[in-house]
Length: 82
Image: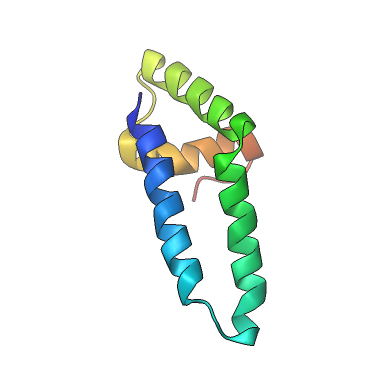
């Protein structure tokens, strides 16, 4: 179960590194959007939803590691997996 939280932390690190590279004026809107996503990833609500989904999915054996982000997006946001 803990791999999903480690993946979230790794994603935050990568997003922060990428944001540091965005310096041009035309990149500031993208930087702002990425920071919003980072805020969502850091929120206790997102962490709780991710934990709940991961527990349910692993209990039923319905999820594999590579599909976790898409499955969470589908389950939480109602977005298509592809």
